[in-house]
Length: 273
Image (cartoon, rainbow, N blue to C red):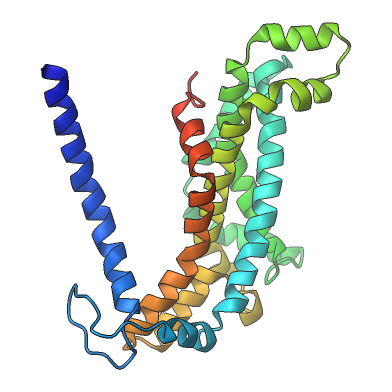
């Protein structure tokens, strides 16, 4: 009886928070379905549903170029950060070398340091090497930033792998890299998928870095392009809603496609120590 009551209360609380999170999203989608000349006040269903607003926002806001830039940046960030995180996490979890503990906790300091505190020194460093206003100025800092969390995440997973599996591979003559690829990594697909989804989400939503590093309109990412679209058309609420929905579609698709692995990786104890 007590468990049933606790379950009901827990579901009720979750339903309230889900409603709080869902209502603004639904409101933006409903607003975007209106014609651009419609007069809309508050949360309401459109009298005339049209998709023309999305086509106009796509063309006027140059969203195709911005989303292409975001996809390019996110692709290289996800590949680079995931690869380095797997290798570093495996090394810290299974190999003993001098200063490994100190180096690992020094790496974790990157998770505590606010990115805003280093953005200006980072800009001058990249400018010195001629990397500003390029994809490299967006990809390299995000890889470095994400590797801190990724290493912690993958180290925790590899520490949960039974040592007998690794020792058996070593007895069979497998080297460290072969053991990683063929023995330790395959069962950790949910953990890796969770990491990939998080990296893509963080990279896609990054705003401050492209704002500081990019001046060429062709290299602007989707969040930055949306900000410029909103600044130029501050009175076009319906157009801004349509642009926001378009830009959020890739993130939603990635989460929908990988949601099972994402939830399994997050709930399977990948971050336990």
